[in-house]
Length: 398
Image (cartoon, rainbow, N blue to C red; front, side, top):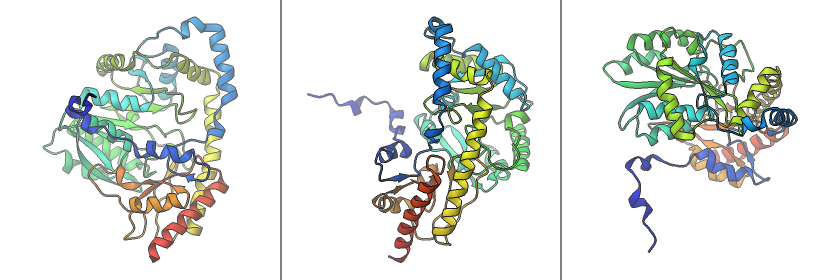
């Protein structure tokens, strides 16, 4: 008789569920479907030749050391390069403040392991990053939600939420939020840091897309406005080199690092050594910023192409806000149209997106949808938006 595995699951296993974006990945393999669903960078811009040359050099010069176990904190020269990069952005940090993680998602997981238990309260945006919710749900968190508008999280609502509640932390993506594309304004950043200092609430600042700004000047990270060490900062190299290279940097106070390192050791001992050396060499050889500048030029054109196509083809009742950077647009459909219901009809028309409801911790978002504009060429974007417009128009008149 086969074992009943469900009878063996622990209680928190009920919080494990598949990501909508992961479930969409099989659609991308169908060349007839134009997918705006995955949070994908442009694969044709991956620096294959540079990675190949660096990998050869690293293995030729340090092969035995690179293929051996490494330290849990991360490759020290890479950590030092992170310190130098972020010190230039106003961070008051040293080597002891940097932990190299296997993607920013691992940073979310490590922080959750330290702070989140059953029923613990986390403040998140409404909407917020789906995969962060997956992680928090695994640890059986509960949520207090704050609306997100064109200027990011409405932080002026935080005092009413934080008063008399034991909140473990606030999770926020201030730059080009996934899914909404919104950027937290400078005034709201200042206001937020005043509020969290007053209430002594930690902040998890997820800045995975922060390098990819297409318009305007970079705004200061919350971590750079954090004299008391309340902000845990998550940066990412995966979004600007390749998502297959799972290397990110977690920056936090020294007093937190020992526990974070212990949690990291229990998870995977250390981040891939070869990948860390590749990232370090990109930085040491002054290749990283040049590569990011190339991405920005391409992605700005693709964002503009999607907005132009939406303006041209979508019904006037569809609204959106132009993101200053990142990978996503977040349209809102006309009243009465549910993006989840519409999804199957869109796939039949050979265009895919992510329905908005899955990004809301407490329900809602049925009229919203997330569109990725970085993975497709301008011509493909136009064709895909035309297909989507046909589906929306047909649903309005049906």
